Length: 68
Picture 1 (cartoon, rainbow, N blue to C red):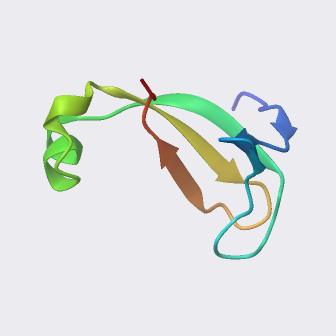
Picture 2 (tube, rainbow, N blue to C red):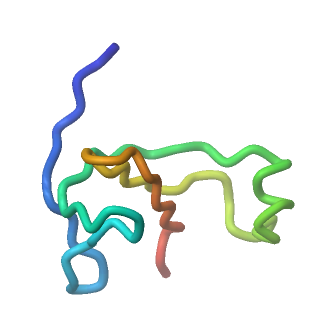
């Protein structure tokens, strides 16, 4: 399995903190959203890519759609 760079993440000018465990270190990557996932989140209009940040401590995943 590929190693991921683990670091702090800033979102809209604020340090991202895990909502589950309070961790502040994440690994990040781009993820594709499938048609079913888009429908589930009512995001068919949003395209098919999102950035995910995975908490190093507990594995909780936060998804972020492109802004703009």
